[in-house]
Length: 556
Image (tube, rainbow, N blue to C red; front, side):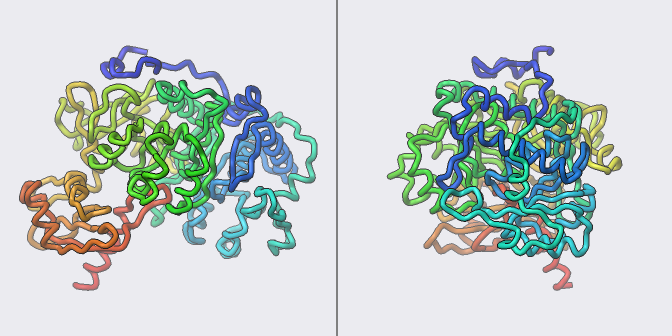
């Protein structure tokens, strides 16, 4: 590969290009199984499963799926939180040539219906707590095979559920009962190639037709290797026997799928599985481990962790090896707190369409506050004119991020129109606006669609959010453009205060006036108990925007 200007900033043991083996994604499980068969692949509420046991269970489940008639190319929905069954099902489906359709367990039947219809799902793996939603779904969509499990079935000391105890519909199958029918874990002989689709990752909203990014086996292997090798500077100092990762990011989201689950396979690391986030439970869990090698997460969770009353007694600075943040920008104040604790961290950027990766700050080397960093190995990145989408913009000028390389999706499932709009000559148009400095570091300005145009000025909400976070009484904040008769749009801030704090709209506006140009200062402030977030803690501006639109219609 041609030497790129940003390569000079790579850490000393990170390659500028990678030779990717012609592996398929499920074969990543063979690496730790061959090297450390008796090491725990996962810890789930105190119960362990070794890499060898995980591969055996997965092969048996693969045989069961093939026995049900699932063939290469069939789409299989995986509707599970982080638990052993997700990993067993994921590797089994891929090994028989199936395509995993990732589904958030919190989705409503309407949301699931859109995704089932879009993907043409013929089978679904779900769990006891989601059965009411699945029963509703199956009245409206024909899903020939439904397989259910109990969320506690792999916790030692708990009874294993059955078809009868879950009161499954006639014709539905039980996860553990299916596996029990196949005692001999034979390897699947279905030919699967790196170019074959492995996963459909839905992106975008829950209204309209969702877009399913098609990620190939080659995409997943490339992303896993890039992620693992980027972490070399600190991770390689921990012996494989001791490596672990906090699996709080959901596997059904592409970020958790690559940076936790598949990273753990390639790195021979034990996953500490957390199926739901509760901050007090998380602090109790952390207390049980001497050290966490890798903790990929999102800014909201990092904020909750380091501001928790038990943070000091747990001595997180000593306990956490490498923090990785994604999904949303880390506020400057938070970066300073993490640095003060002496924790290594890397902040990165990616999309479902780029297998969750793309750009990141080096782990050891030059980091720039507010920057998403430099492109990953083999990932080419340009900033192009927002209007014409072709001309490269000079350093310092805002342009749309476009990316090309082995991470980029095949396209959107069964949606050539959307694919043509996002992929042009292999370049993925991200819709994110950024600037690049003289060192090649990239700074997100904002989402193209989040830009506020007020009184003729282009305003990027991120500038305002950074200031709001600096206010001593503010725990979380986000700004948004709302309709305004005079200015077209005006800036509104949504603020969550720290526990016990009181604050007025005037205080927030006065604080912003001291730090922002007049046209950027919020004109409206709404105090809330919480801000809507996605499963990975990403703030959902879209929901706030919908709320504001509904209010505007009522007031007309």
